[in-house]
Image (cartoon, rainbow, N blue to C red):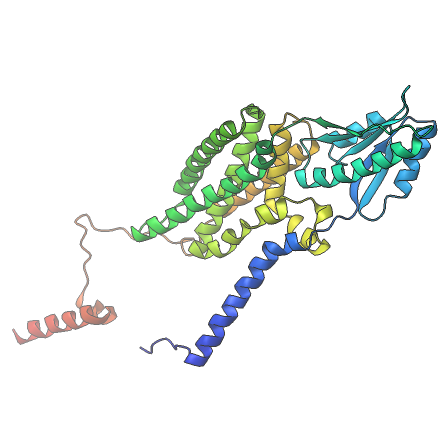
Length: 376
């Protein structure tokens, strides 16, 4: 039997160099490229003022001179806070009058992505300070801009949603890959029933670990049944998709599932208005981490009615259903085949006429046995 052709030294050098360049290109695109090309554009914010009066006119002037980095909406204070609760804006600049002159308040939300909140706070604070100074009468000193945060949270609360989403992916991936490796070494196949049992147990255990981390990192986080249910749905959806792909592709699926983890900190941590349009279209638009992260962020700070919770639940449920299809889909090699019955004693009778179909040494032994019988 002819052996496999081995590339020559020159081809081996070229192929390995090409593989290194390809790995650098893929990792650069998935990780550092998103951050290096980050630049604010059309960041949605709102300026709120009474429906009539000089403050309304000032708000409209601010919105008209917003520039390319911000996308302004002119609203009333009530409408602005509703937009902030629905995450349609990242911050609201509220203008108000009083005996001491006009004042400005920047309203933010702990349920909004921190990267968008940071950009909005800086832009709105500067715009509010300049506007109040321009409206101050008789050269009076302008009061400082106040900052009010709806659903306040800590640094741990801001980073926890993305952290547990990424850890949920890693936990399911390690468990699924180890099952494939250990089952292969034992010469056993992982059927759909065992795969389902493994996914269920893995999801419960990983969810328990992540819940413990959340309680340890910040005891003020909302860990009600709605949050735990969403977290369990996240981990189960991830683990089911991974198990389905590993069942169909084996360890080759790691070439796809492993690099996907890199999308979590590089892309899902950003808001689309800070990403290059190519990253927004090719990566951010579909990465599952952004749906789990934004939904968990709203739930952990107690803003459970935010629209991204329902959106995330639908997307994660879709992942779960798709993973179940992959996990339960019958394999081609097993379809339509029936196991041949074995004799009661476990011995298969092979006649002399079947010896020619035996491979290698077995065929030679059968032939020698036949010649010995003839000599007798």
